[in-house]
Image (cartoon, rainbow, N blue to C red; front, side, top):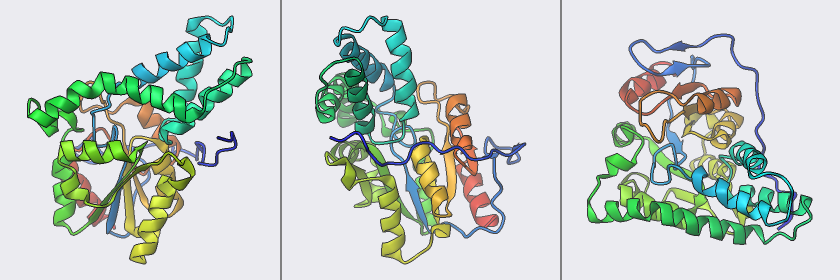
Length: 295
């Protein structure tokens, strides 16, 4: 794979001087929505925005990459390599997984190593990640845990509320589509999204969240103002903003499910232009009222 990949990098925009919370909620208003259309189409990211099945994925990806870089014979310490890897893994978070693996191959090459194809690195990562999360998937299959235990809190309630308002729902994920489809079924999310679940392909140029957004607008003959997007990664926030849609940052606390916004996610997503920040969907009905009343 060539190194000149094209999916957009993080592009910061000017942040407002102050923000405020919608009364009685944890909905943080970053850029008020006065005069906007009511959303007719709503796009969700998957991992960290709805699903928590893959919570903890950096604890798999980062050690795997450090292992690969140490094998080049570099004299850098494991701690130095870990800091480097964490920085670029999180910097690229939100893009398809393959982009992190392309960067890994570049770092191997910089150290005089002969990198594997990024797809090979992605396969190693997926195998190790599956070892970590297979128990969660099995527990969902056999009913030992309910889908609600593996979802960002109150996900089903907000999806129900959108559906009751006649909104068409979509998923676009940087995770491989076959995994997204399977995990959506395990969580009962396929009933909400139907055929509108899209994920990464081995040919990474064939998929992007921006392409999914373009398809939504084209097939429905609508402009971006009728679109809202929810995500915990910068890509979907940036893409939604680029077409004039409403971007809701889901700064989810994946491991603690505390109802408090994750500070790193919050700052990063405000920096790329999010209109609103929420920690989860516990104030979902108030959020929908705001989206409709302020439209």
